[in-house]
Picture (cartoon, rainbow, N blue to C red):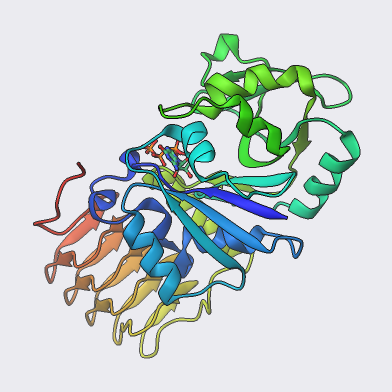
Length: 327
Ligand code: GTP
């Protein structure tokens, strides 16, 4: 079994951080969100193929320097081809069926059960679905009593949403779906291809545990909470010499002696939090400096951001000066 993970999006909703860092490498609960997706893969998966594009070189370098337990291979696209175009571009050599995963999903999902359901159904695909109140940002499924998907509408107005069950960004597909995707142009798999696949039998696999899509600052911080609360934060103890409330995941070389925490914090590699500073519900990426007595709350701070001593940053997404804008 192989898994295709889509990592080529621009991540516009997490700008300005994503001007320099691809979304998948933003750490939550102590490791990049891409690695939490790797954690979902069942033992049947022997290779992950990354459909990469935007800032692909950074994703490839990170994976080379931090090898996950599963073999990973990246296939680049020269310009963003959308989800379907990315699948087509990277899809050579996939298994039949294969997993298709978004790289920003945080979930308690049993993908082995989903694989079994796909093999039992004999259909063309199985999509994990999760129930949400506000369906507007998502693809929404209409379901028959046997959970066969009878309609799929991408980002509908609330009055047009056929249910509250949305595409959770985790699926198993027969390899033949790749033949339905045109080559050489951007294609949205969800909008252009999935509706035409329904006649071949696409089944919903309803998730009952937690789920979020870490694509916006608020959702990213919420996803981090979910992971910490599920015990999936890497070594979530308070950094030495600090006080207050965890969980706090401190990555290599992070220090925070004399600082106070309010919980649900990731300190990226070599972050320094000054004495008397307080950090709560935030992600601080590589080499962020928080000055003495400063406060950081509800924020995502990109690499090398400096928070001057005694100042406050609340509900912000910041990148350091001088970052190059996206092409
Ligand atoms: P926004 O710009 O904030 O919407 O983020 P995004 O670009 O990541 O888009 P979205 O969250 O809708 O993408 C869902 C998944 O598809 C993510 O895992 C993306 O990395 C991936 N994706 C989106 N567009 C492309 C693309 O053009 N090529 C590839 N290979 N993957 C893509």
